[in-house]
Image 1 (cartoon, rainbow, N blue to C red):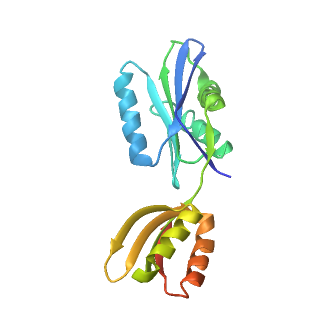
Image 2: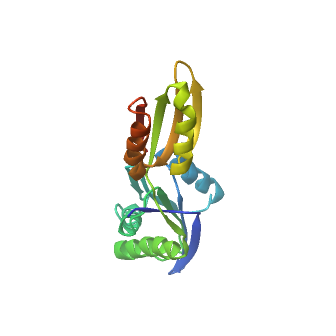
Length: 197
């Protein structure tokens, strides 16, 4: 089962006088990751490299930021994949210490920095959510609201037009059962639309 992180986690590693400052944090998408990396560059203007890896919503990235190709971003990404993480950005800020590490040394240093960070990170199960809209005649709105509350669904929005229309979110694996129950209780007078998130 895929997991994400509850909060950012940090660590620091020194390898042959080079300083590797690592962070792993929850991240929803590539644009947010790029903004975070830009902020790190401003916080660490003297850093030699700000390398990063992202797994989020089907988007992935592995950025070496001037290190030899495949020696930073890719090893970091592999650590995220190996730990079955999703919605996570791993960053490593490197301050060069004057001693070259070679390709193998760089791969080990970047992978170790991320792995060490993830040892202290609090991981949580990633629950896919379904967002649905259910429309019913007004006489059935109370019944619908009770069933949503009983199922633990989150009511996001209520609209009142020709029908009472409720926008809700719940774990995707529970959506089919809820729809079936409401369809049975309303004798087929509920209309559904929605998507998995």
